[in-house]
Image (cartoon, rainbow, N blue to C red):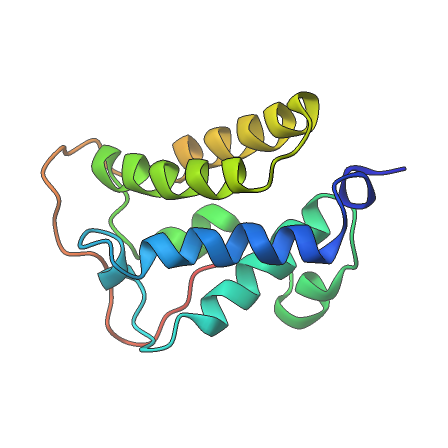
Length: 138
């Protein structure tokens, strides 16, 4: 059984992402990074990506091509402050799943590595979040 199935499949990843975006929606540092008024499309993209990564359907790649995470995030300023804010909301989301310890650790360690990988500036001062030309992340 792959990780996707072991943790409960799509419902688990939808809950994770819904909890995450509930925090992002009110975060003054992260919310401006999403030019769409409705966070629903961003949540759908992240859900599809995570499901595919962990062994679920390949819908993400079928719809959007190769993930190319760094390239998709390059137009956005992602410094230590943004990374830490992202990790705060994602930690709360992961904790909300009540996964067994080994699954919790596996998921969290991947997300933490991914967050560090997305950093594209070491400037500690939060700056402009990113483009307003409709570019979309993940």
